[in-house]
Image 1 (cartoon, helix red, strand yellow):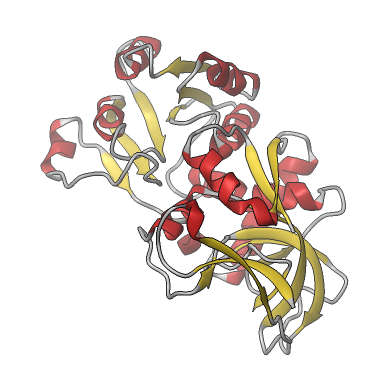
Image 2: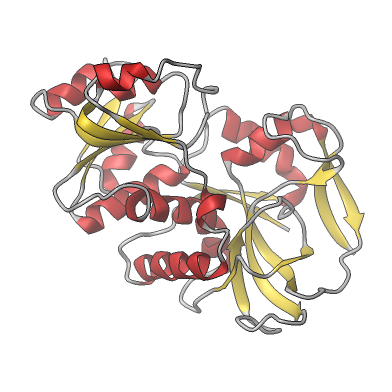
Amino acid sequence: MAKTAIIEEPGGPEKFRIVDREVGDPGPGQIRIRHAACGLNFIDVYQRMGMYPLEMPHALGMEAAGVVEAVGEGVTHLKAGDRAAYAAAPPGAYTEARVMNAAQVCPLPDAISFEEGAAMMLKGLTTQYLFRRTTPIAKGDTVLFHAAAGGVGLFACQWARSEGIRLIGTAGTDEKCQLALEHGATDCINYRTEDWAARVKELTDGRGVDVVMDAVGKDTFEGSLDSLKPLGMMISFGNASGAVPPFSVGILGQKGSLKITRPTLFTHIADHETCQEMARDLFGKVTAGAVKVRIDQRFPLQDVAAAHRALEARKTTGQTILLP
């Protein structure tokens, strides 16, 4: 049996229930893993609210780290006793232990703790595909990154610094701006006190940025397009303020032949070998010290509702983990 946080219908954080569930044995291509820590992400909120529908009842959680207890037939990259971490669909990580497909579970280097592993996989792999796999970004290029003091943001600030990429961040308080600067942002704009789109143009001498990375969505979409230089790339990868409303594709031409994409991590990691390669790249950044995993909030698994409330209220910085 494993204590598991589930929802039985969409709604607010009060919809969580902690139940005991059978774990079972892994089948072909599967593993059983006992979690030491579980990650918390905004996609969990979207799923809980019903924005991304799930069959009910359903456990939530997309990432965790722990020890492999058993492997099924055909699994060759892991064995019982291995330390491992993952970001994977479908959700189900808010639990003490689970059986799951092995393809997206990655061997965790000894130099990375379970807490770091649980906190880094989804956000770190997201950062990896944003900088490595979405559009060419070279040393000296300029990126605008919204919510630069958030979970993905602090990874992105450090990643950009390690690659010689200029990162202009936005955040909602002076304290969060300072946090982004400490983690590698070249500049950070408090969007509550400044016209951030105008400030971006000032910081780039009127040219605009090469790439925008935007997980905020509705509130920042138009300003993000206006912040791009001609032929720039808009990467819309989240909806923290709500979904981007419908728009005429012709506006991309009017604003300078802009490009736009709406990627998801789970497309990038669907292939086993690609996922493992991305994870090795991420682990290399962390073990080299180029990217540090900042965990600012820890909640017991039974307090998952409080963790969700803190995340939605934007009271969190860095990473948040749940401890089974």
